[in-house]
Length: 287
Image 1 (cartoon, rainbow, N blue to C red):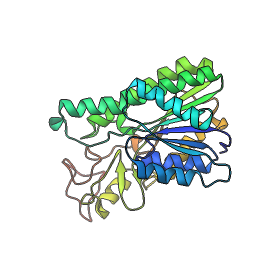
Image 2: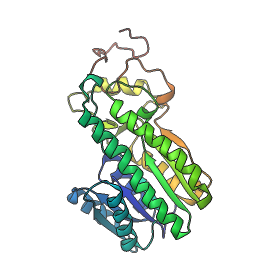
Image 3: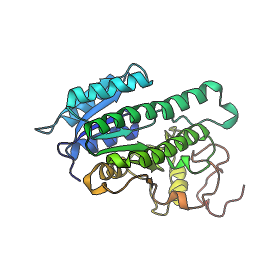
Image 4: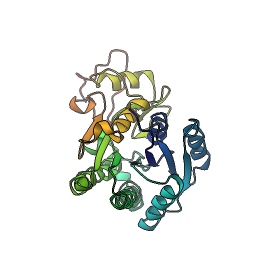
């Protein structure tokens, strides 16, 4: 996909998936604005990578908060640095797994503030600028299949991103007349080659060969996704090839969401996962 002359803002660029999407957008030819909150070293690394092209432009923009005023300043800074804004990618940053009984008011406040309100404010500010700019635009939210499926320890993640799914659909409906598309990309299991992720990074003591076998046994394609495979869908949605795609929720999970997985949690080694051994069959196990 070709994104030359397009300018993309990645909010949450320093997250695991945001990093991969940023690099893929840069490889596709987009100029990049990396939005971050205090992750200066990681943001600088992304800017260096995105600036490698002869005509590549990239800038890091540090935010001092995630309210509507800060979102407006972010869009203004992005336009000031790149001249325009055509693409906005929004990645959640609060993805900590936690059991229902352990969740506190502070946990919920943070999840709703960072995964819902912050993404909403940035998408609103970006959309307002796109409308004023008078050009077609792309808004892409990174979500999770946990927003559509009930897993143990994902109430914070799933609830907050389910809200974002609805925001995206309504925004797609209202912004279509301005030639702005709004879509959701929902990953399932993702691996960076050494560690597995499902919204959150799996702790090293859970990331065992048996756990990987259990996970991939419930995925029709038989393996976890790579970051580049998630990013490729975002690049497609950002491109002219997806000009007639809007309001879509796209699971990128190898078919995981359509299978019936034994057990109720995506996190290996936590209840109610079984004690896995060489003879364990996830499709016939009883609890």
